[in-house]
Length: 594
Picture 1 (cartoon, rainbow, N blue to C red):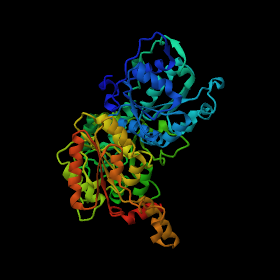
Picture 2 (picture 1 turned 60 degrees about the horizontal axis):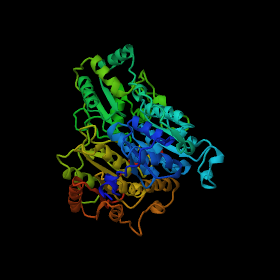
Picture 3 (picture 1 turned 60 degrees about the vertical axis):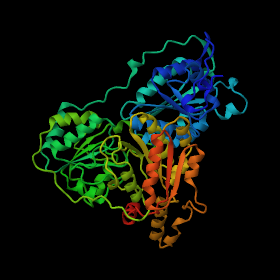
Picture 4 (picture 1 turned 135 degrees about the vertical axis):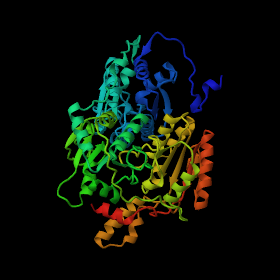
């Protein structure tokens, strides 16, 4: 037997060639359709409900475009597809088994939904025809309306009943997922028609005729009104929120800010949107509106919101007790097209004097051409100086060590932990940082990093995820997938041995009620015993370094990790940071009470 052609290593998973067959199965047609849609990978955890499709991907398509990525948990499978889309802007697929796999995957689907990232989620159910069900197992894995499990946080779902209807469902799912505002879609495939003999494959549709539409653009009249307002502004400000990783769009935003002499604020909840070392970006980005950001927003007379995630909340913080928003608001966002009643991820309803129902990438070039160059300089204000290193092992110390170790390198930060200060590192390219997990849950960091690393493979840009220990522990098996398929990446764990954000919440409640604040750690600390995270990484086949307990050891550890990743490895560095050192307790308390 040729070992190279039957390797169990992920990078060499080339199936043995089978006989030529005239008689084909329903799942062969489905696999051909997925290939026609140019889905490069299907991340999955195996399940009998889609064993037909699994066989077709392997034995009919030869495990090539799409290629199977075996995952040890469905949540990781979806997180990998999510991370791939964040870094590449392109849709990838994930495949989950019946109702049980879909329930496992649901948190990761919600993350992709909140993050407005495209995802093709394929599922399956036991035969809907009860006469075809196997005793017991097919019954508990058959659901009459499986899509209802995630319908409230997907853009569209469908349960196809035949090969031809599945063709249309897959076309529609990809088109809708890739139409702004983007998000996950779900197609459920009946196990019975996957395994039916169909003879020749029904002709495939011309997928080029079913592509997602180009982004809509505002009317000329609205663009002129917005340009007039911005051009006549005394102190404009741009809130740069959800935007793509396009370098061209990045340059357009810079040119617009410079032409208007407008200050720009950015948000750590989403990817890099503007160079944070630019003179017009005076305040470090933050996941919540900092006091300095609130002050800048409050001082502006015209605000240009480029799909800012929580515009209403930001205006409320900046209003500082005023009864209504004084500034003129130009809102650029297509997000209302995706709003539902189940989830409040759309945030509060902001006012808008001019509402441009479009994506920022499509609208900014039109504004750039229409606005008049402002001669008055941008209003200056006090900025936060870069924080100096210290002798405490903290997220701050980790950030300084990372900056030193990666100087001159092209890096993609795939995730940041709670406690990260926007002043710790500058972002100078749209791929320098791709944003958070979207839904505010825990466990996505490793999978997002692996997915982004897959998209960046061969690009020369190193993917580095910085995650908390809770995040790492929930998603650690994503590392096995990275090792198995030779997807190099570096994960730095800011390990405070606690769900520390919730310690602060418990302290806030206790303080409000006049109870002992010292009890905040109970039910929160991940210690006694401490978990050896480096050994957990090694258990997945990755390289593990640490635990690191001295500031002087952090740079050498990261440098060693970089060298290993450059050599093709997956590496985890466990840095034992001091709990709470990077948290501003006064700010947290104020936010927790609001």
